Amino acid sequence: MTADLLPLRLIHALATLYMMLILLNWLGPWMEFDIRSGRFAWIARLTDPLVDAIRKRMPSLGPVDFAPMAAVLSVWILREVIVRVVAQSMT
Image (cartoon, rainbow, N blue to C red; front, side, top):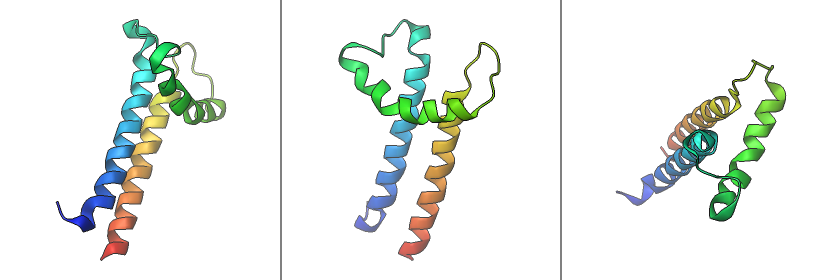
């Protein structure tokens, strides 16, 4: 790996990790994994601000909460845009 690609890979990896944490926070209760307390409470503190902001802006769709999926999609799109902009600025 060359040093000039390191920022791109770091941005990509951190955004991917954040998406995985959002999914873990969303699926945790279904897997009987308590994400809100104990040593994994930092996951909820890290992901809830984005998910809650999206949840406030989304219409209610019944018992299913689509805010985490919208958050993952938003982070994915943002990741792609940032990586492309940084890559173009490096050339």
